[in-house]
Image (tube, rainbow over all chains, first blue to last red; front, top):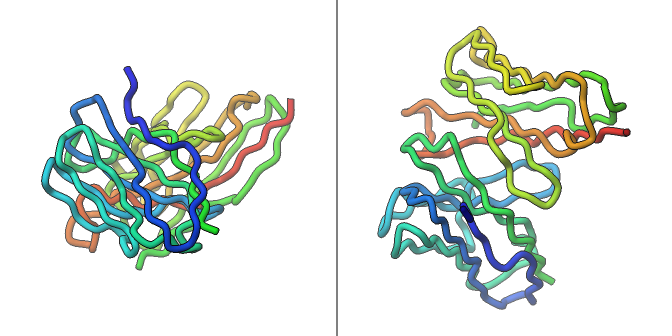
Length: 113
Length: 116
């Protein structure tokens, strides 16, 4: 039972490069989320999705884009990487509408130099 | 926005000691959650609290939802080395108070270190 799988685990980007962080879940959850974690700052919601084809902005969406073409996959796209996007990114899913019982992936550590 | 405080920021304790940490807010919440993040992993839900005054246990962990609905406490008894990690409290915003669907607000975390 894989749960939430994120790839890659680590990545270094140059300023201005683009990349896609992959996230897939095998629990058939409708609700999926992307968070970023900066040292000592907790987790901030970037984007979320309540089902295939439906996405919405969270607290810190600037510089990111998402899509949700299937229930399983929720990729996060960085178009023009900036040093401020250096962070650890977590994808999560939940089985119910209120989203309190989040199941997290193991994270992607991204450095933008 | 809401003022959220989690304390202490970090703790260094000896194996076998009890641990206590808390979260306070300037706003009222209808759900308090406690998550733990092991090093190099994503957070995992430990305890969920839904009613003011509620006291819930999960093994050596006990959490309470404050009566005022503005605070919550987490206690760990007889700590062991695998308790090392970051403990986060999180809040489910009440509908109509500016929360987007499924948006949990996380505290900044309490980093726990346990010396064997």
